[in-house]
Every structure is written in C-alpha cells, then in structure tokens.
Image (cartoon, rainbow over all chains, first blue to last red; front, side, top):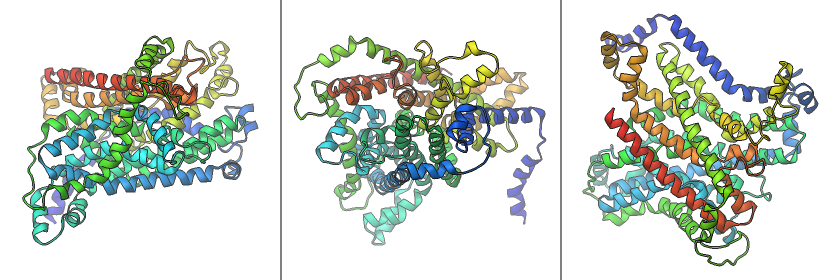
Length: 290
Length: 319
C-alpha cells in the first residue's frame, strides 16, 4: 500500500498542477502549426473523394459525397496492388534480414577485441558518410552484370548495405553495456557461442531492436530514390515509384494520385502508432547519449 | 528524409562514441577469435559488396568515358573532373545544393527548436502534443512533394485559385516554372515541416537540462530570454551539433523534391548535385562523367561534415 502510494504520488502532484493561460496559448499555437503543416495531406485526403472534373472546376471545393470510387479505380486501373505488395516485401525482408545479421555482427565486433574490433567498427561507421549517389552507378552496373537489375532482391541488398552502418553504431553502443560475465556463465553451462548470443544476448538487446526496426521500417516504406534507380518499367515498382509513374502517365487523373498518396501514408501512421512508445524512447535515449 | 536522418543520426555522434569507448576486453572464454569473427561475416560481406566496393568503383569509373550501357569504355584521365569544374551547369547545381542544404538545415533547426521549447513548456498532455507534432513527418518527402506539385499547379492548383479568389491576381505565379523563384519555392516546401526527429532530439535534450540551473538563474533575476541564452542554449549545444550535422548531411543529397517538382527545370535551373549525378549518369548516358560528379559530392560531404563538427564542437567547449 505504502509502496504503491509512493510510486503514484509524484505523478499525482504533477496532474494537480494548474492549467495556465500561457500553456493553453502554446497548445493552440502548436495545434495550428500541426494543422498548417498537415494541410497539404488533408487537402489530398479531401480530393481523394472527388472526381477530376470537380477538382479542376473548383479546386477549393469540398467533397460532395464520400464515395470510395477513386480507391476502387486505383486498384482496378493501375498496378497499385502489385506496387503495395512489392513495398511490403522490400520493407519486411530488409528489416528481417537486418535484424538477423546486424546485431550478430555488432556482437562479434564488440567481443573480438583489440585492433580487429576497432578496425571493423571504423570500417562500418565510415559508411555513414558515403551518400547513396556515390555508389549508385557502379551498383546498377554490377546488378546488370549478374542479371539482378530490376528485381526486388537488388533493392533489398542495396538497402541492407546502406542500413548496416547505422545498425552497427546503434547495437555496438548498447552491447558495450552488457557485462561479459553473463555470457561466460552461459558458456560454462555448456552453451555454444551461437546459442549464447541468440538465447542470452539477443533478448537483452530488445529495446534497441525495437527502435532499430521501426526507424528502418519507416525509412524503407517511405524511400523513393533506391527503388527509382533499381526498378525499371519491367517491375510494378514500389508505391512511391508507381505514384511517380502515374504523375507522368495519368496527367489528367489527379484524383487517383491524391488517392495513391493517401494510401501510401496510412501504413506509416499504422507502423508509428503500433510502436510509438519504443520509437520515441529510442530516439530520446540515443539523442541524450549523443 | 526520415531514412537519411536516422541512418546518419550516427555520423554526428561517431566521433564521441569512438573516443568515449572503454578499453575493450577480450572475453576469457571461447575457442579463439575466428569463431567470434564468423559473427561479423554476413553483415560485412553485404556491406563490402554494397557500399565499399561500389564506392571504390565510382573512383575508377570517374576516370572513364563509360556511357552506362555498352560493355567497353576508355580511360580518359582527369578529363571528367576538368569538365565538371568548368561546367556552369554543375556550379549552378552546387549553388542550389548550398541554398537548399544549408538553408533547410538552418531553418528546420530553428523551427524544431522553437517547437521543442513550446512542447517543453507543456505540463499537461505533453505526450499527445509530441505525437501530434511528429505525425506530419511520417509523410515521406516524395509524397509531400507530389501533393505540393498539384497544389502549386498554375491553372488548377489551390494556391493560385486562392490568390485569384482573394482578389490578388497579380500574385499568381508559375511557382515551379519561373526560374527566378523556383529554388526558393523548393526550399519553402522542404522546410514546410515541424522537424520530426530534430524536434524529438531537441526536446529530449531540453528535458535533461537540470531544473536547478534554470531556477537559480530565475532567482538571480534573469528573465525568460536571458535564461534561454545563458543557461538552456549552452546546455543543448551538443544537440545543436548533432542536429545541424544531420540536417546538412541530408541537405547535400536533396533529390526527391527536385525530381518530383521540377525535374531540375526549367532548363537546368533547379538541379541539385544529387539530381545532377542521377540525370547525367542515367538520363544522358554519361556514367563516367556522373561518377566523377559523385566523387566530388563525396568529398563535399566529408569535408563539410568534418568542418561543421569541428566548428560546432569548438563552440560547445567555449560554451
């Protein structure tokens, strides 16, 4: 009873703090700012319920009826469904593969010790300063030579390489904080190194993993440049690539482009909503440490 | 945008993490280091093949006249670099990259800091507002730019329609087709954000400023502005370094907005370096020339990151 009370008390005290006029003004200002910044998206959302004729005749008008005609048309008349599937495949495969290899590599780098450790770490971190543009032309050449150009595999591989540096940095700084003694105990109990890692160390890395997964998933979902370069017209592309093609091909189909844009945003918000807690925590912890 | 920021969230911190690393101790157990090294192999393999090797190959290709399609090419020495340095189009791209990269870095940081300060003042519903503020940055740069392209359409865009309806027909412009303003319009669109990650980093740092310091300054009679400049600002100098470096690294490779909004046009007026490399390498079949431009971009990124870090860190220490 006393313990619970002690834990609840500080919170209660904060809740009792009075609402000040200044605070309410700040809230209104913030609300207006968010509304302003989101206004293009809101505009697109409204127009996804209108026809092309309505949009061009009266650009400032509101939808007259909330029908999902555009949403149906988008899937019937374009390759959008395939593009969504491609984006899901790329995002999920890349994230799964990253989680399969990056924590393990960071663990190896941290535990191998000595100069090797230092060298590998710096080698990976150097990648943070290499813009994608620097490696893009040779990569296209290479994938053409091995016949992987314009495949999802190519996009996934390019993303894997690009995300490795950040992952190594993130995981290494956390593995440093894990005492070796725990692993030694597991080893004494007869667990191999591989098993020690996956059953003892990896679970301890869960907080970093959730932050890493959500950061990468959002980045992959929203990416445009990599699939633009590595997927040509033989593929339906990713969502963003498909929308970009629609802008060129369906010049008089604004309503479909607005609809596609809205559909592309929904999953980002869903990913964020589901893992928000971990995300903000991960960002904040990393930031203060930095 | 998120991708770039997050991926590079690290770059800024690299120096510190590396120097703060405690002496590494080898575990007392284990059958030699080879077994440990095997853990690194899969990631290292992909990384070498996808990042290091192609980067080195860029250097090699930059010395050739490769067109990007045919199997054969000749080495032409430093000709590509000579041409780049003498090309007005390239320097225009550099100028735009500076305007957009540096401009957006400064503006986004100011906006984010102001928003973070406002969030920090809230004692009620702070979590809710933090989420609200973050939401717009979940929309990718590509999608945002695509919507803006239609908002700014000359005939049917809502921007010009609103101006006409408000009785300001002289204000109506061809926002994306007028070469005297197009770069500034793109800058505006890039900066039309509440910062997202940048704001979160500032907020986290503001919340770690010891309240005793602020209260002590208050007791000494310092007003709001004075407290900010003399207490808060020096305390968040580290966050400024991180955020400015990140924003600049992201700024040097601005691409999505340019491709979507103008395709570098009218003419070559709104090209950035990243767009220039893409256009020359893939659109104009001059992969060798594009590689040389990529190498120049690489040098710019490294140099500006190191310089900016050195400068900002010096500021931190003085503060």
